[in-house]
Length: 309
Image (cartoon, helix red, strand yellow):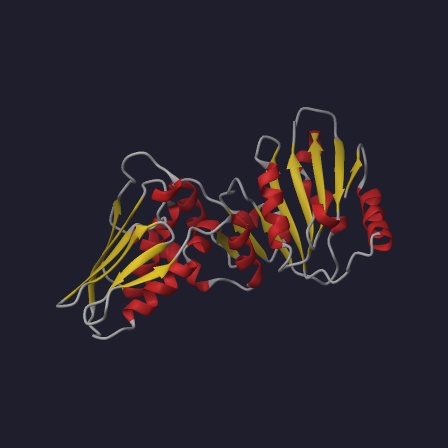
């Protein structure tokens, strides 16, 4: 159910949430408050779909801040979403205009759940220093979505414990496959590594930086693009291949077809492992499971400058 609340205030929104809990028998067992920051020209419906899908694992109070025209008169228009429109969460979509657009923290603060963790998510834009933004300072966990290598560099230099990025969550399962492959016999020291993938994929950059940090050997990041017409059947995992060079037994893990990767370890039969590119909802669900600082991500950002391009 969607309840429009035009030209409203935070106190009216708070009363609307209480009434929704009373009249629509909503559960009150919210595990956290999720603040989502987007702009008016972003694909807000896609963001809401991801939130709704992730809510079944993490029922939350979700405060979606949509920043509109800064030159307009100060105005707060809201929508209260419950039931099927919100999954297992309660969602407040707030359109902020005028001075309110740059003071979103003052709008969301009265609506925060008491005694629960606060997570801030920027699904379409990554501020250079998330923890130092007024709204980011409210959260103990901050999730960004970098889109360029410059964004990634800014996040690295402005890192604060509690930061993470969607591109990092994209390679979680791939990292598990890599670790398992390196654990197989024969055990030999890795001398160098080559990682390949599309030029615009930040997940590939993070994968290369992670391997450099963990192995302490030279890592080269190569560019490979899909050839020919791009159809759903041709879609491969973001990281097209990783090659571990060793004295006598190289390991190669490559995406040979949609939905799976091939693992080639000398002395073992060639194997195929299921692996798909994860949706935003899947990555968001994973990040919401861990509310402490992600040390592996911090170390990976540190390794970005050491990758050879």
